[in-house]
Image (cartoon, rainbow, N blue to C red; front, side, top):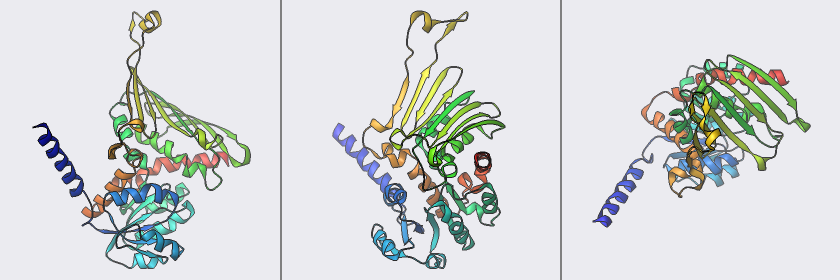
Length: 345
């Protein structure tokens, strides 16, 4: 009886997974053959059976080699091939930031849906240009944390948060703009949870050889927070954490996969029990990084890559706009990032 139930469950699970594939859905093109594409986006796309008709690189040989990863895919080095093909409904763009905006604009001009890796633009002014495009609602700026399971879990627990701390530390980032390309992650993350920043104080310590160390004290409408954003550490010490304080709990997230809720000590007549009795409150913890090797615990899922791609492809398939991550969604994010860049020079 038990074996039969297990077999039925496995059949149902297999059928559900196969029915969820997009192999009969619309055709897409992918622009980019970088490390992030290969390590994170390609696997998610392949896992969901998304049809990639063209793969673009400025070097045709590279495009042709990478195209072998996708069934029936053709490598191209001319963007016009993609833009002029009416069967291609959407385009994934994952290139260096300096190339992103012209590519996004060209695809939108051709009335294609666009999935572009953050930041997509290098200034608030460029974001405003993108927002003004007649097809702006067909563009999705892929801030993957918005689709991470940890953030979905956090949203259920932070309604009464009144203070938070963020720590986002990396090593040197000589290949790009650390503010726009790295610090955009934690800044967008807190803005989506707590709303626009009403006031902030910035301390800037210019690190050696172009490294940046920022400390931000910010005030939202109902919440205050502190952020440490730095490229002065080492990549071996990389940390991306968020700690929220509520009247009853401390909530700690270590991205991509650790979520911990610790109840605060109770008081009687202002006397803290935990100080007198030295008792420890039971913490509730979820750690996906040490869990069983199933799809839901895979880093591609935990970082939000799978679900952001699923959202994009589903919206394209249904002919809907991308309001959940359209350029207008990130107005406050890029306004603040722009201000920070101007202050630090």
